[in-house]
Image (cartoon, rainbow, N blue to C red; front, side, top):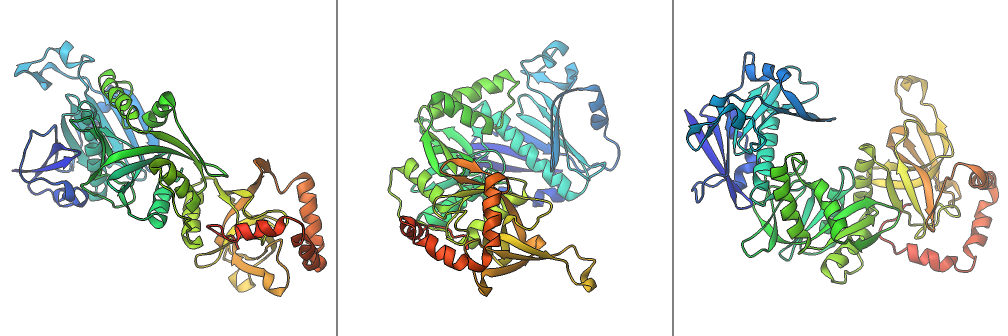
Length: 500
């Protein structure tokens, strides 16, 4: 006995068939907003989920005889595409058996796709996809999390590749909906798509998150381009059965300053194509996808945004996309630096504009930016971003690293003392542990020029400044009286995020 479930995403209905006793059918929470109990159209694809295997799988063992078409080996998963060797009696066409030549011809998009997770030996999911991804069978072996991983990926693939034939695209993007329009933020993993969406949510009125990883795109019968929520939203549980008219695409890149420019047709195409789920080597799917993209970019503007992970970046993109003037916005330090911390822990470099005067005279708030990077070890003299207490961050220089007391010798922690170059007095010091250091400032960007603060004349100046600590208070007083500096300080005192 089987049960059939139907879901409608981006106006397309698909079918999932389970064994009646399969507990996996009850683990479809992210699909529930899209479930339809009355069929209004024929499902454009159907996936049958086999009961989990307890013995060997002939289809899995036969993969070694098949040709590998693509192998996507990522840190958190591996997906391998195989071209199956089909027999004549495995495919029917118009009710008739296809010949071996027809069964294996390039006119049919047929794949065996293997999904595995690292550290899960002898556990796998195998998608047997036939007839241009309109018919599928999912063979699973393993624990429930592995089976659910395989099911989600199988459904996402079938939707993307069968949907491309119908002008529906699945895109890697984060989407904000505002006033009936959807704004899509594009970029490689770790670029800051989710962070930029969060900046809109925190700083611009009337915004909501539509999807945070894999929205669907299509045009309606009148040719109006829409973006749709889907059951696939990455790490953010945002499964909304909703849509919005596409208001624009924004390709994000990390940079020391915020600036945006509108892209031409070719540049727009180049920005959008890599973000779409596509079998690029299959001409039939690629041709349909390219036709849809060409239509979209003729109707929807695409921008390239060089940005910092700050509130001003949201203002810049908002004004370009909507034509509205955004009121001055700001974001709390704890929210900003928490996002920065996530990006850095993922191994990314982050550029951040500095505000405040605690690192004068070598880093000027409101003018300079720093490039932050995670390091294995830190030493005296390093300029670091550290969390000195819960959600309180500073960008200061390490002045001392002390070993832990003997009774804590097994710990890797060290007592770290920090101080801003522009601070003086007994209250100028902060303390944290080594593990509280988020990143090291690798460079300072000043007037568009990148400066290494640890080499050459720059290092000599900073070393001399440390040596002059006893009279630094008077030197700083004189420095602050330098013409033009007062207005600088007033400017960055009003900026959106302050590095103490």
